[in-house]
Every structure is written in C-alpha cells, then in structure tokens.
Image 1 (cartoon, protein in one colour):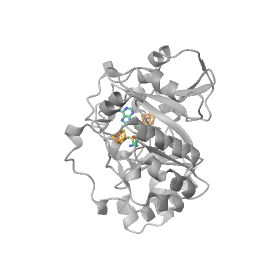
Image 2: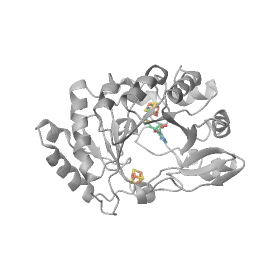
Image 3: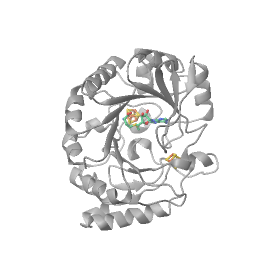
Length: 322
Ligand code: SAM
Ligand code: SF4
Ligand code: SF4
C-alpha cells in the first residue's frame, strides 16, 4: 500500500471520461467560457483499454474504489463496456447530472456499476434551469433516479447550494426524498477552477444549511475519508460536504485522472502528472504503478485547509473530474 507525505493512502480514483457536458452549470462550466471551448480531441483521450490498464496497475497500491465522472460521463460512448472491464473487487461508482440516466440505468447496473450519485440542484423548474443554464427539467433527472433505484443501484443526490440562486433547495430537495432510500448531500459552493466567479459571499455553509432544516441529529461517519458529515432528519439521512467551512484534507485519499491521462493529486491542483506518455510507450503495469507510487509518496496537497494562502491557477473541475 502507498502512503503520501501526510500518511494518507490512495484508495479512490476518480476517472474523468470526457471533458464535455450537456449542461452548463453556472458554478462549473459557465456558457461564456465553455461554449466554443477547445474540448479534447478523440485521439488525446485515453481509451477504455488504457484506462482499465491504469486501474489494474493501481490495485496493488491499495486502490479500492473507482468513480466515473467528467464532464458528463454518460456522454462517453459505450460506457457499459468500460464498466465490464473493471476489476470486480472494486467499488464502482459514477457521478452524473442524470439527464441520460433513465436510458442507461439498467445497463449500467447489469454491467457492474454499484452506485450512482446524481447531481440535482433544484426540484423546481425555474431554479433547475437557472443553475444548469439548460432547457432540461428536473423531471428528467427524477425519472433517471427512479429508474436507477429500480435497477438496484444505490443512489445519492448531490445538491450544490449557492447564495442568491437556490437556498430554498435545501428544504425542497430534502422534502422531495423523504420516505425514500435516496440520501441527499448538500455541497458548499467551491472555488474550483478559474471561470465560475466564485466569491466567499456566495457560500452557504453547512451550518447555515442546517439552520434551514429541522429535527437534525448527527451520526458518525461510515468510513475514514468520508467526505460528507452525516445527519438524521427524523428517519431521513442527509449529508453536508463542507469543504469550504470544514475542510477534510486530513483524510483525503482521492486521486483523479483527466480524460487525457494526467494524474492529479488534488481537486485544486494547477498541474497534473502525465501518465499518457508512459502508457502509450507500452509501459508495464509495474512501471505505471511505480510512477504513481513516486507521485503519491511526495503528495502534500491540502488546498482547502490552506484556502486563501495559495494563489495558483487552478484546473477546471469539468476537466479533471468532480
Ligand atoms: N457532470 C456530472 C455531474 O454534474 O454530476 C459529473 C461531474 S461534476 C464536475 C461533479 C460534481 O461536482 C457535481 O455534483 C457538481 O455539482 C459538483 N460541482 C461542480 N462545480 C462545483 C462547485 N463550484 N462547487 C461545488 N460543487 C461543484
Ligand atoms: Fe456539467 Fe456536471 Fe459541471 Fe454541471 S456540474 S456543468 S453537469 S460537469
Ligand atoms: Fe483532497 Fe485537495 Fe480536496 Fe483537500 S483540497 S480534500 S487534498 S482534493
């Protein structure tokens, strides 16, 4: 098993399958920056064979979980064939905006996907369309969630809360899932990338969100490295991902690989580590593992804990994978 400079293991690999998306969430891919953007060309993107080779290489280092993300992962062609290639002993998850989920859920479950996190920032049409800068509706995403549940997938909902846009979603989204097994997790608006005009005043902290809900009692974490602080609201479980107000770098065991094959050791990194060249030189799995081991061993990232002290250009979240 490999450990970084702060003794953190490498457990979780987030794979960005594409840098493209069928939404333009204002907090992630604002249209004025991303319409007409130079997205990756097909030949720059790692193939499924190359990606599964990386995943297999990292198993001896302690990898136990893979999350497929992007951009929008369901835009990548034939994604189920990739899921089938992944080692069965891994926990395989996906984060999606849910627009295409109704169509794919059953095939995803049949291919070996274990869990899906669906982003849903509002259940009312007006707010959903404003947050996502989209003509789609929350009904499409809700149908996707229902289909995923029926297919046997474990489903969570991610709701980003941004001041002035969707504070009312704290209560409305939780209420929508009362009585179901879907866990809602609220995310503080983060300063990822350079294009989303992040500003401190637009952060609704976990504490502020909890004040908007009644009858909450904290429950303990499921495992070390869990990103959400968990609560029961009556019998409903909800979570808060408080990376701005309560950073959790201390237990961070996540690496990310961009669609073009660079390894990032922090969501707020400015530079990745090129693995694609190594892979395309036909490196063995031992050589890939060795390269990642040497990158991980010196990792000392803790951006959220040092927010405000670091002033480097950050890579976009849609590029390295949320
Ligand atoms: N397109 C997929 C989706 O939206 O679920 C996967 C990629 S998206 C980058 C992954 C997650 O990052 C989503 O849940 C999204 O809401 C979240 N996210 C993106 N930008 C964010 C920001 N500035 N602050 C907090 N969360 C953000
Ligand atoms: Fe696309 Fe997801 Fe970013 Fe929204 S959060 S723009 S759905 S990648
Ligand atoms: Fe991990 Fe970087 Fe986020 Fe800290 S800021 S939790 S090190 S990804």
